[in-house]
Length: 113
Image (cartoon, rainbow, N blue to C red; front, side, top):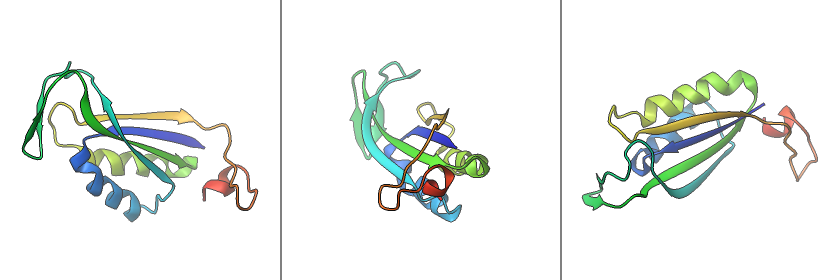
């Protein structure tokens, strides 16, 4: 099992969610976050408003997947979030030790599927 964390631009969220749904990746959590990377606080225009300062608005997706779904999860995020400009974001992949579905008590990959 893997835990995928993706930091993307807010205006790409709908496209990424649609791409993940098309790949039948449903176990997702979405959070609005602030951060900076190589942009080093360089402002960008988001929905007609210039964002300034060291922290820029981003969206964080957290997705738990079984190993067989990892490649298609990464590709769905990458293809839908990519604009080719600085600030597109990052994808992090971590090993997921375990997952327990509270409702049924299922463990491991069965709890994700």
